[in-house]
Length: 348
Image 1 (cartoon, rainbow, N blue to C red):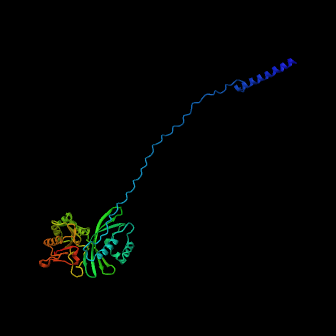
Image 2: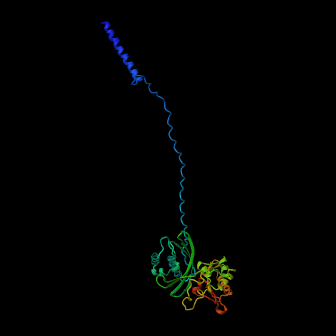
């Protein structure tokens, strides 16, 4: 019995050993022919090199477009106002207000209808806008300076005011062009303010091919101040040589500010049928002498009288101003129209 128990024990251990051997042989493996086959060698494969990525290009610099500069603003001078010594100052103020309404506007204010509205806002007939002519150039924006407002004539119930202007217009490319015009504004007495009845913008015409020698000297003379329309008159070749010659002679002892030469002046002496020397190119007006306005009571009368006498000595046959001067041949005169400027006329 004991031997039997011992046998069974050895037999079981034998079975276990046989099974272990079988497992070991199975781990080694067999071929179909019973020959042992070596187990695959577990070798470490060379690492695979990943494809090289192309280099990252440097960032492209971003160019920011420079902002378009805003166009330069147009000059914005204050509106002209009559000073002391004026006869009927509101007549001039009325004329200047209308010229400013028709000859200047902000962006978007161009065109006939806005112009009529601005005139109507002054209590004047909107149809006056249709007489503006060169005073209202075709531009998106215009500014205006009134250099001077002088009488072309003033009577009890009617008046002519010559409004002498500089203008600046915005061009389509944003640039600014400078120019100017003189406008003969006609008025009639009314209450509470005088009424504007007509506008006559000046028109000097085209410039001549080359200025006459005396004209060239006037244009280069710093002691002679000329508004744009007077410059255009001289350049047009329609002004007699006596005019620039007298200007140059007077520019020796004086600085003279010219208001009107030919354009923008009434065709006839105001209130008469007698032709004026201005439209014929035989006269010019001076509104300031040595920087002092003729109309200003503070301007020495002696200065004005001296200037008038020197104008006659320069060849003028007809000198008018605010000072009564006795003289032979009736070369000097004074009246209300000429209280604000000196008129210097020639008969050839």
